[in-house]
Image (tube, rainbow, N blue to C red; front, side, top):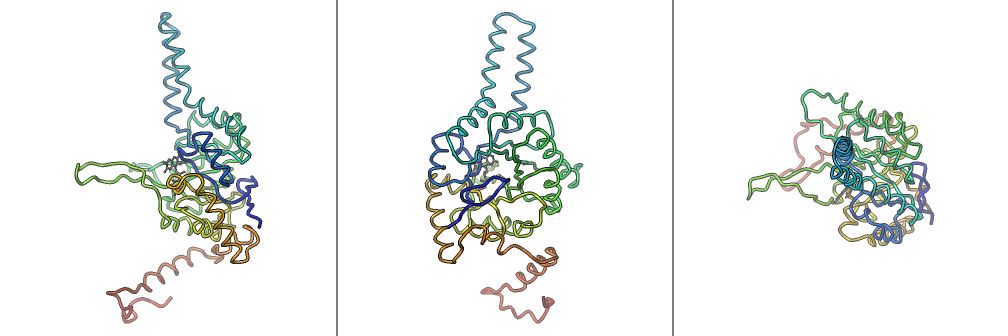
Length: 344
Ligand SMILES: Cc1cc2nc3c(=O)[nH]c(=O)nc-3n(C[C@H](O)[C@H](O)[C@H](O)COP(=O)(O)O)c2cc1C
């Protein structure tokens, strides 16, 4: 059975990628992920805030060092040691690449076009197989338009693309008004792949303490549905970029659904944090079993089988939406609404 797939122009031995999380921060865990069958790993992100902070600190230390006493000079060397944040990251890339046979995808996480994007070049030099750019931004101000927010995403991708030659993936949340057009624009700006979708981390209200609280709630398979919808609409339609599915992949069933919708690769984090790296082995076995039972000899044969082929996807989606709502039946709804809704 042929499980290979192509993502970002890289040939993967199967479609399952371990996405960015602290599980991918240590070499021994990365080895376990590879042994369990991961086709590629995404390292946890280097955040724009980390890089900015470091730049500010280095600048301060440089000025202090230039005009002061020997104590200040030793302070300056402490600043160099502080640089171990991003330095360690580059070291992790190099060590992981040397230790693993599978592709190692590094991750930069930010939202603005600024000096920090230069780090993409360092990441490439450290040996990353590809770079995933996670654009995480909640545009809450009253003065930024949707068009501006999208243009800034595209500019950011273009800026990073301009720094590196390795494949570039862009990971986004779905909250854009016209995601299809944005996807095309990102493809045009040089993205080799899109990761659909990033999860929005939403705080909750603690009713006992009467305050906000932030925690990481791991995902559930119900969260695959928005990704399935967009993958099905974008699959086969972008000129260049490949597509990775992300969010809600607990087991093989979600992998299968995402592949059928049109994903080239499928990522998982929460399931691995819940069950450990070896969970991948079972997922792959169940993927193979399902394919065998359904007579699929390869991932290529099933990928995109259920993608949206309607020439007017928007009209199709509108039709499905109305159909779904009007088709609801439940203990208090008989469905006999006397033709109040138009037939679809
Ligand atoms: C604890 C934790 C840490 C994460 N760290 C990162 C990160 O550093 N960079 C990133 O792009 N995504 C990060 N993510 C997001 C995941 O890569 C993934 O996109 C998200 O969890 C949805 O996938 P899932 O449903 O399989 O968990 C993190 C997720 C979790 C739960």
